[in-house]
Amino acid sequence: MALVIPTLNGGERWRRVLAAWGEQVGCGDIALSCPDSGSDDGSDEAARAAGATVLPIDPRQFSHGGTRNDAVAALDAEFVILSVQDALPLSET
Image (cartoon, rainbow, N blue to C red; front, side, top):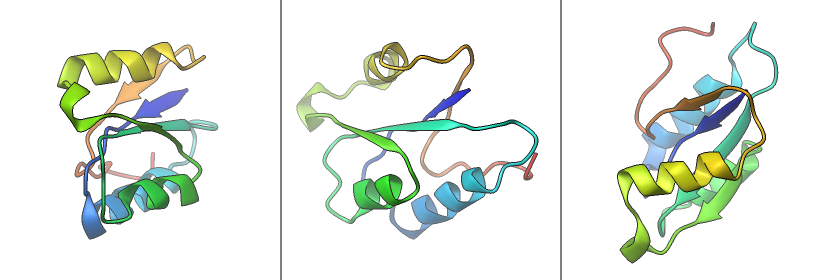
């Protein structure tokens, strides 16, 4: 299973989101992929520290659908979850 979350300057909320996804139970390993379109607040480093693969995206090339499609195409996973940098999972399951 994989999780794709595009990032750009997610700040403290992003760090909380990363922690919440890292605490998920009952779903096996989740490969985290984070297309980042130029964060300068450490969001990309936080993602790497959480074990994510960070895909640098030129901000001028970012598009909501296209960026996600590119990230999914780079994965080898049967199931892919698409989310956003400020959405916390509802629970740990």
